[in-house]
Length: 317
Image (tube, rainbow, N blue to C red; front, top):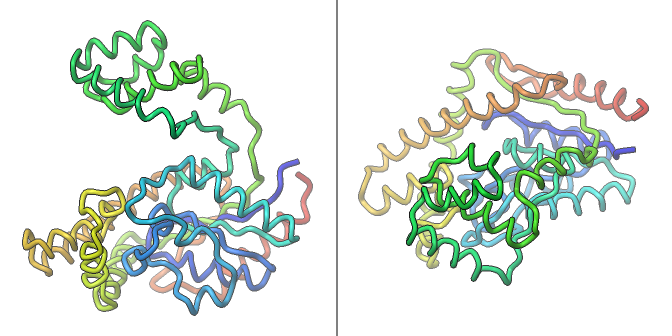
């Protein structure tokens, strides 16, 4: 039987951290972050990472586990977050997954297996990339079509990264990426999860809260945080610096935008990201949904979610 965990998810600025901590305190739980940017050290303000005071209220995991110049992957997240959850469960505690990165959450819960990326095969990837540049996307897609017609049908000749990746997997494993994905989907779930999704009843209230969050980040020193990262040698082109808040702040620091323009753009991009998050979490048909009115009522939410957790823990798998 799959072990049980609780998930607190939802779009940005909906109070996930606060509710997660409250439930952890009530249920002997420990927080496992599910945020693709909070894994990076030194990126605290712009990612709304739990503060030292908040972390003192409940144990937190999967924060500050990577350097900002690293390309952190969903496969690495699943491996490391699963190890955290297993440790928490072994100690008789309740893992509470908290965050807004739906891909990370679903990949962890599903028991999904990831195609290998051996460290020693960078040469193969480089060779395939060079072959793509020499022959062109159409020719490389035709090579893939001979091996894996179903995957080739889904790809555009200009999608170099996915074409190269599909050919790489086939050469490394002897299996097509389509075969790998089919075998992965057949695996049983890694965990049984109670999902709680936070949101605002009205879109205007969510957007107002996002704008307030951005203003608070700027007041707390977001530009200074980004300046420190860049001064420390972090490339503005690395994956971590493409995060909302960091990319726009870096543009302002280079003089490409004014600070006011950067602030407005951060708010706009955050609202767009929230819409994508809402689309992802609508797929969770069995989730407990808590929609705030003008302001979050954490006490009422903790009671409602706590009642659901009690039933969930006591139920048979």
